[in-house]
Image 1 (cartoon, rainbow, N blue to C red):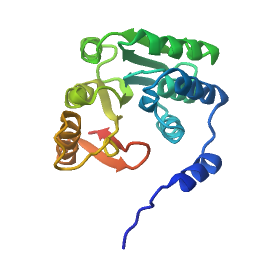
Image 2: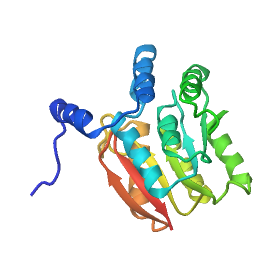
Image 3: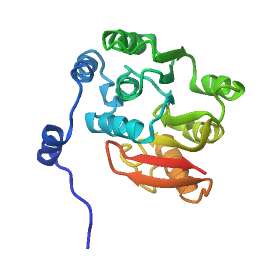
Length: 220
């Protein structure tokens, strides 16, 4: 017996109306992103944002790293769920996107919690690895950037996140045309990473179908 739901537009709209409590500032940021950027599909969905918030609260995460900031929806969502002492480090290379992010972080009065690095993710993660105050002290690390480097980000994340901490990887299912014979490099990379994590007993795993699919890894 199949135990999954085909989530059509009617079902998804029902989910948004009855299952999501999107903060007004997040909604404004989401709408602004949709208006200004053609690549607005890079932004996580409201249900993903709420899930990240729920997870931050559940795990009482106080130290978070995000790989791929875009216009700052995920980082703002997580910062809203953190305590006043929480810190979130994020990175991106696009100034136009991150200017929007910084504007809304300030508007929400959470800019003191969020630290933006305008540099490639690998450079950023190397800095994190070299810092004794960061390495093995991160509670939660969210990967949502260029897919070709996902395997590198994953391996580096395993050295940065504390034991018992969580790595979240976005777009593990819903990448366009994702299937076993796809010739696109991004799809191949995601498929290979999925298979690797499935056999990787350095982590506990749970793959969930929310947004483009997310894999949760608890570092052992």
